[in-house]
Length: 596
Image (cartoon, rainbow, N blue to C red; front, top):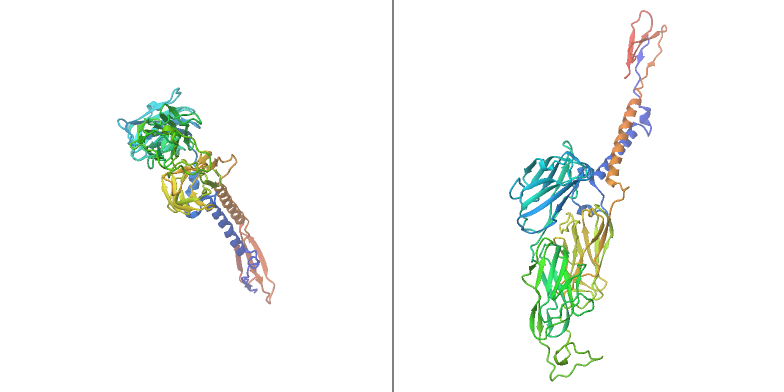
């Protein structure tokens, strides 16, 4: 009999080679790790960068992987506008008209949801906050006049709207009461073009600015005291009330009797100018009116009344001032108008004339031809140069995050202690904040920084010539609209009582994204998807081409007659039977091998 000995297990030749399965397993784990890293990076958003790039991670709000999905969501198919865009604070009976236009796709049938901000009158079918919907003529197949309207708290939904492409409808929100707090109010809007489509946000949603009541704010004058019959230049500074804005408003000033009449002619006595960047004044008799005034919270309007001769006798002159906060308001007098004290002229009897190193100045209108002295008290406008402020970077991409660094340099004489520098963040940018890690986080070096609305104020400064102040502002994103953004800057040395606008405020150009721009997050996520597809394909091919296990049989020769071997096909195509018969009368041993 020939005994059959099963082969001893031997190490696979693949395991002995450095490129065997173990090494392939290690490499196969590295590739999915790279894919996972690309997916996480794409979902988490842009990486931290220095100035001009994304804010450091410590100063960014947390993000989640779903943020990419929200960015990739389809845009809305229409636009929504509102009129008017400004209303006075705490006003009663206000009516707002919202106009929706199907710009990219019609509604058939679609839905529009409008959310009224908290603090405003809740929308309703009638009475206070009444909602009415109408088609804008010429209306084709628009059915907005008869579309059903539903209410849920502050949300009003216009249902089953048919609105062809290019046509418009209006939603009128009537008899509403405005909140008592000033500031912007956003009416979030969503729409879907068809019944089975998801709600899409309308970007941008309409916004209404709540302004302060007419007749608020303060106006100061410098200098506050002049000598009788002297010629001076008066600078009036109007500042809105704390946290308030002036939107297309007006400020008027009346020159009292005894003073030179104001003039709009350059070089003439009483010539009037405005600044910084304010519309030109209109002069009628003794009244000075500046219309179209727009001031963010903390900004100031200056009216300069030049070469004006004061009354000839001691008195207190009141310059009556009125203010209108918005184009829809009416001028209302300020409760505390600015006043100038006119002091009696200094007596020159019995005194020697002062020493002079040049020709004597002619008399300027004093009685009897007596020369008068130009007052030079503290706070008088002297035309001294101001400091400068630069910003880096000067250009950013629309809707992209970044860090802006403002560098203030004082004038040649420095900024006397306790100096102050202010910077106004324009609308559309993230409001500044002093909270680390929050959107708009802002720091300064040196000085003490504080925030009021959109105004950044740094106090306690003492800067010598050549020293600088750095203000670092970290917005979450630049505005969506391309164009220049001016950050109005002002300064006040410790010896002055009013802020003075810098001769040139820093500006940042917001550039729109190029047509071929592809977001980095999208590239990373596409890379991750490609990695997943590649891994799946490799595994599939390897599984299909994997060879079966290799087996072997060792035969040991024994004494006796030769044996016989027969192979029989089982009929399944996957199993073979091998029979070994040493001699005709010996038992038969059969081995079967089944391959997958």
